[in-house]
Length: 127
Image (cartoon, rainbow, N blue to C red; front, top):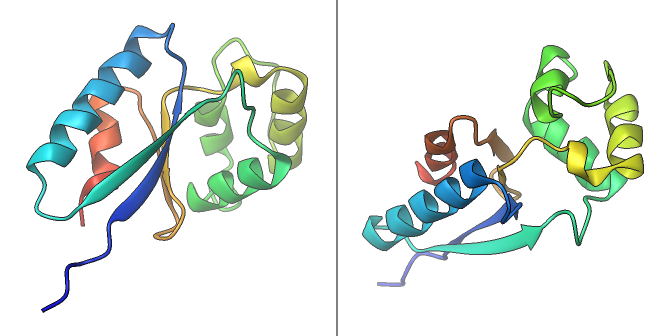
């Protein structure tokens, strides 16, 4: 019997943000107790900003085309107004710090979760 492939998720993280640090701790604790293997790639998005393609893909996973209000949740409250995926791409190109964090993405399952509150990130590892 073969071992199931590890679920691979990307955690977009700001180590200076307490919510992001809490979410990271929750995720790491949860994956040690889950029955399925999970690997986490942590990306400090201020050092390695999201690409335009990543922004589009994540917002598509969050169903922003059908529910544009998701774009407001994807960006921080103090971010410039963005109502479309293209506008969100521009905001983050100019200032990656405007991303709402933490953010977790399962690229294979086409799922993304904004970690507000921090416990929300656990949704990404549920089957």
